[in-house]
Length: 237
Image 1 (spheres, one colour):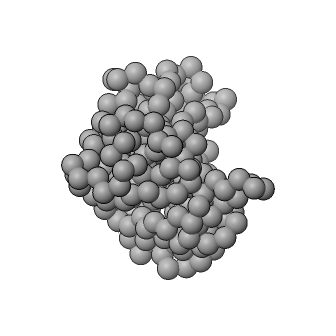
Image 2 (cartoon, rainbow, N blue to C red):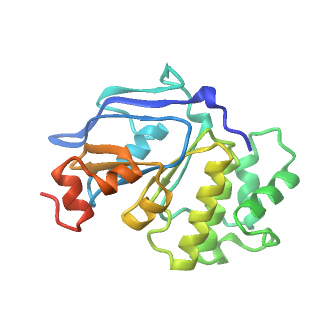
């Protein structure tokens, strides 16, 4: 696996998405560059998923811009995303990865085995994907995303419905992937998870970027009242 750093950074500048009178993403400026994972936090409806989808190229901006390696409107070929509830194809675990590899020149059998091992599913390639446990399906979804050999990997609350053991397995994969040079941008409601994984943390509220800082600084010395309240478990208004 390689991450072409020349494709980074991915930069959102005044990124805004509106649906009629409702502003979902409100002039967000944020840069994702090579390095440790970026964790997006914030209450429900804060805009985390919308930001990830926009950065992936799945949602058009109403205004503002997104540049990818210094280029506007660049292809999302080196980007990948995993959603909270990934859809499994009606085929084996190995065939799910093979489907993602179809557009590449990589020898499928070798690469499939590598990816299954990377996510802790070695020897499970022949199992029907839809019969895997929730945690196993999420790991398979990660393997499928990594088949794209992305420079940047977006994860939308990938552990929200998982038990502690499955959550730890996903976190271990995130650390491994980040150590291999892939930039991970991950949304979460779990502040403990943000502390464990985050190189930096961005707090969103009502579509606005409230605070963005190194994880240690964000939790030890939050600059805004909203960040202090959110860390303390208070309801943001």
